[in-house]
Length: 324
Ligand code: SF4
Image (tube, rainbow, N blue to C red; front, side):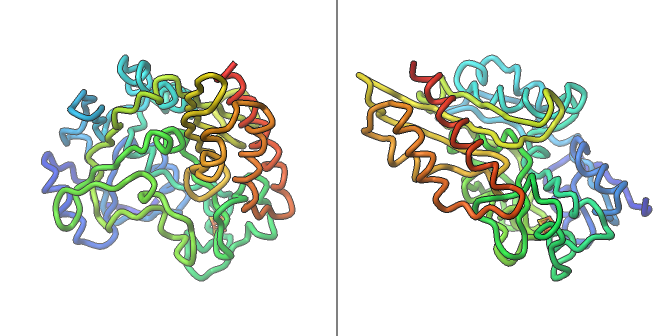
C-alpha cells in the first residue's frame, strides 16, 4: 500500500479545509475505502479521519428525523423511531453486509461506497470509472450483475447500497458542507447516471463533507418494506431489490412509492410505475403492468436480461403482500 498522511480533525471546518489539497479523502468506517486502498484502486496521499466530528446522533426534529453522517448502520437499523416510521430503512440496513461491518460502517460511508464491478476493483482491467478513457471491460466480459437501466456506453456499473434504495422512496435529503458552506441535496439528485463521467458516483461538489441525512415526515413510510434477492442468504450484494410503500383504500391505490436496487448506477425510483398505479385497482395484473412500464426502458446486455423478470416478479410479490 502506498504511504499516506493521516489527520484527525475535531471540527468540520478543519476537515473541509484539508480538501483544498490534492489526493485527500475522508475516512469514516473505512469498510469500503480500506479495501480499495489494499487493491490499489484508491491511492490517497492523505486520509482525513472524520470520526471525531459531531455527527453521531439520530434526532427527531421538526419535519422529520435527522440522522448524523457517522451513525453506524447497525445503530440506525435498530433505532426505535426508524423501525416505527421508516421500516424499509431498517430492513435495508439489516440486509446489507455482516453484523461486524454494520457495526463499523456509517450512514455517509454507505452512500459513498463505490461499485463492486469486478473490473473496477482490478487495476489490470480497463475501467472508465477508475481510469477515465480506458474503456469498459465489463461490456463484453462478466456483466451478469450489472445495470439494465440508465447505463451509458462508458459504464454499466450498479450502485451497491441497500440503504440508498430505501432512502429513495422516502425522498430523503443529504446534508453536507461544501465549498460555499452548508447545503443540502435531494437523494434523487445526489446519485447520478454514469453518462460520460462514470468516474463521478454522485453530484457532491469536490471535497464536500456529508453531515447527515434528513428523513422527512412521511405517513406512508410507516408500512414500507425492503426486500432483497441475492445469490446467497447473507453477506452478499443484491441481485435485485425493492423498497416499496403503498396506500390502498377500497381496493384502489391512492399512492405508491417504489425504488429498485442493483439495476442502475443509482437507486432506481420507479416513477412511471408509480404513476400507473395511482388510481388503479390494487391487483396483481396492475402491479405487473406497472413494473413492465418501468422496465420498458431497460437495455440488458448478453448476460443480465434475467434481471427484468426478477424485478417484475419481485414487485408483484411485494406489492401483493403489502395489500392483501
Ligand atoms: Fe468500470 Fe463501469 Fe465498466 Fe465496471 S461497468 S468496468 S465500473 S466502466
